[in-house]
Image (cartoon, rainbow, N blue to C red):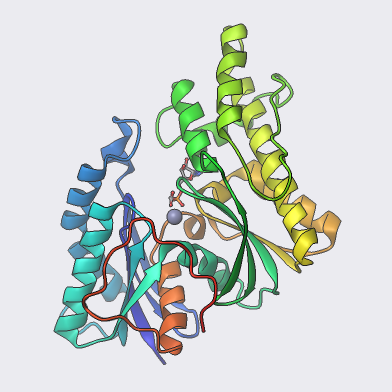
Length: 335
Ligand code: KG4
Ligand code: ZN
């Protein structure tokens, strides 16, 4: 059995995991820095980089120990690490650490694209997932509709032309004074609000691209006109508009590629309204729906391990000169 140590430090989560080639997660440790960034209203790259430096070694040690190994005797066959996209200072910490470990332990190094990691998150929990599937990848930095024809074979169908879905959540939450990160706060508040309180636009432009910056502006204008409106009603109305657009586009993509499953991924996939709408839309379309657990939606290293094992199996290892690429694109055909 092959076991891989995976490291993820692309943004504000320091994470390490040990995963087997049977997709068993032996350990998955995630140390969130949310508390460090919350008072600044968003991720501060310098603070994130410094926190990764402090947290990487203890997080890796814990992941190895939970999987029965240690820093001295890791008990793994390779080291996988996120090499992009993400914050350069954050990526470099994980990448340098992974290189040092691969060198010291004389193990192959496997660089993993963070977005590909998110695509593998669903497979970790649903290895039998049917393909082709349409994966709606919605996070703080990305909003993508991807046709997954099989592991390693992807087709980008559409993406946001401006703000990512999570970014829209965070910006609207900041405007409403709900703090950072905004997604969970709006999600919770929306449950008690009226989604029809504000009539907000659904940007259903042709094709599969999405846009959220107009919605954010519409929320601000609507609140300016009705300053007494309940914050919960604003949250519910905004969330309903986001979910309507995401699901409509996702189902358009499902029809286009004749997908057998709808899959959610990324931090916004933790959203309760989006999850409920995805299940319902998939049921109506008569296809499978895969909703990763909350821990698999947000950034973690187990998903990087799963993607790393796939690359390792296809001989796709990297030299110790591997560079971090903050704006790395998803490679569309591997293996
Ligand atoms: O995937 P992720 O952990 O990090 C990135 O790679 O960006 O996603 C973080 C994003 C943030 O914008 C956060 O507000 C959003 O996911 N998010 C949510 C929820 N939980 C996290 N958005 C809506 N509803 C949620 N429950
Ligand atoms: Zn992510």
